[in-house]
Amino acid sequence: MTLMTLPEMVRCLRTAHTLQRYLDGEIDDRTAARVTEHLEECRRCGLHAQTYRAIKQALRSSAHDVDELALRRLRAFTRSLAATDDPA
Image 1 (cartoon, rainbow, N blue to C red):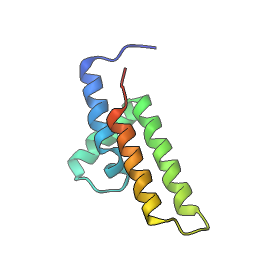
Image 2: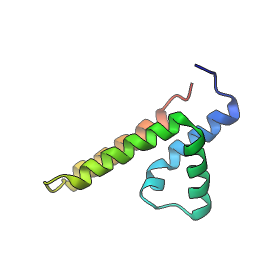
Image 3: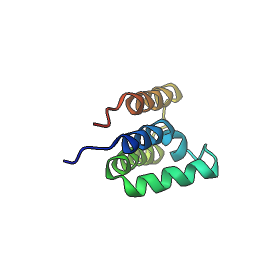
Image 4: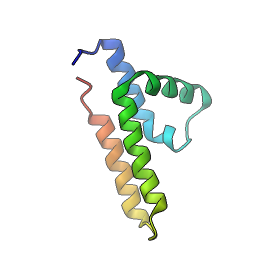
């Protein structure tokens, strides 16, 4: 395991704070390009994105209607995980 440099940690934190909006297509093109580049370079953040994508796909492909309140709570929970995630 290699230690992250401060600039790497900052990039990971910025990515974590915008990841959900990125996956939902809710950010501007410039920010999306930066997030895309970071996800391609950073295995850790890329794995987070894959996990979120898998959750979103599972919810979309569910045969049952998803309770909107539960979905909002799940989104809030994932944002809180990203906000409190320790990059070290």
